[in-house]
Image 1 (tube, one colour):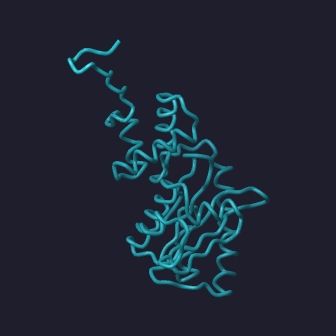
Image 2: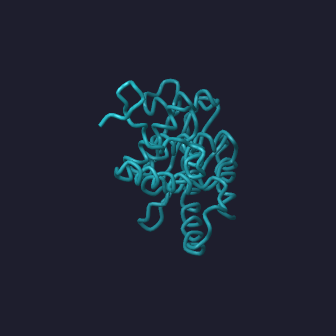
Image 3: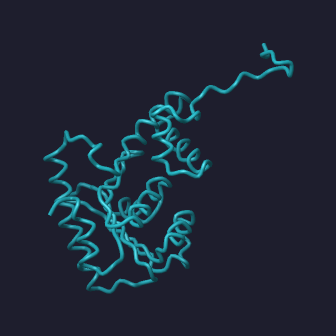
Length: 220
């Protein structure tokens, strides 16, 4: 099995409707490694864009995060509403870790409200162990690989965050927050906004026009 097979294995072993594998690092270093379907990929993209969600919580707490009925769940309201619009009614996330090393999380979804029984939870727990080891081995073997080979790589987000940092003289977390806020304002995914900035199609980093006195002349 390769990292690209992981999400499909989670779906096959649990009967859930989709899954996405995410590796987490600080700021824009997080990225989706694999997703079983377009809905899973979009849910994970939303988690990464918003910086919230069950995947983040599972990674932070190193415990499973279960949202059996999103319509009744008060957590992550922006993510919840977007997931409901996508046709996801339940989300379940589990940490990926090995030997004390925190690697990421798997986020699964169901199209209808669902409670996971003990048997499914046990299978998910076992699957996370295997996935964690495989992801860790893949990282060790290909530490110098070109991350652009991952079609869901968020390397461009990292690059754009650095450009925002340099332009406005803020910290890396604040630069990412500015990027996220701008993406929300224009109604586009963070990755697309980042690509526009890096490739010079966005005016987000343009200097503000100088103030004038109303006569077309700059104020002293």
